[in-house]
Image 1 (tube, rainbow, N blue to C red):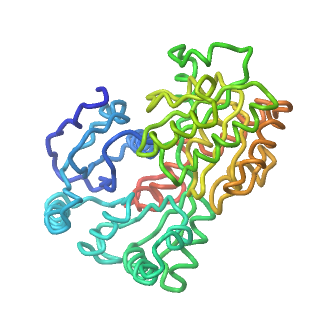
Image 2: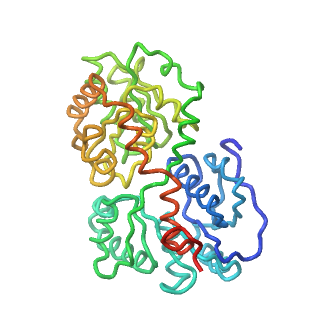
Image 3: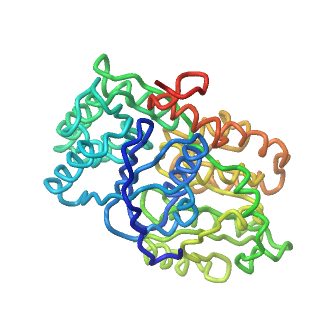
Length: 389
């Protein structure tokens, strides 16, 4: 399946006492699609049946999961009334053992359609720091936004945050009303990354070893703050000839392209667009940079470590500090500070850490171990890995 191909329908099957329903997806490419594919494949390896409740659209990341034979059900998340009816009918008819929601919109639907402590087990996965999300609301909306998140998350049987920072933000938001909170890193298929990293289908700059290559990966949106990365690269390039690739697509493409032209970087900085295999590029680059204003647990940073690539990251509130071991694996710089970012980039290019150290650090994100933890929280496995009764 390629981009532009719709997700195939899979015929229904009898109820499965250990079936997991997954909902909360956005059509189109993105890092979260890779996380969910790894989670789905890991659940399949555990023998857990899967239902995907998806809005209409294309899912180019998901070609690799169809061997797991998940069933697909439509969920019109842009129409709350219709989506509520669809979800209620699905839960009544199919009776999944557990439901995992990946977005606030579908978590809100679940809060209307289920009861805490009653079947199925309802778990919400949160991948962003709630303190930052509240802070970035308009002042007059913040109180209502907080109350709505409190209502949604308090209705779940458990919450999974993908970093300690995310869990801390949930604890602060919910207080004593919080359901059980669990920190589980994003599951990453390290073996698959190693296989795909060997591909030679890469941007031509990846094949020119004489010039250092700086790379970043992510949607071209304001939260990733690629403008600061481009400004930092401009400062770096004045002292050290290098090239910059930013892999990803998004609504800020035009703004970033204009900034590249204005800084005179058109020959050394490029935005190739979405790349289905970023790992081959990461494996051939010299430095990965995460310039985000805020994160939950940035998967691209984990994937860079898994490719043995030296990293620099902004010290945003949640994610990079944990992934880079308090800065021991790579420098952490203040958010939005282009000069500090440029200095850190130059330092790591001149003195990179050992590749073996980075590869070893990536092992704690291994898919299979973290999927087992998901299954335990969802009540699909008892603690220790045996099937739940």
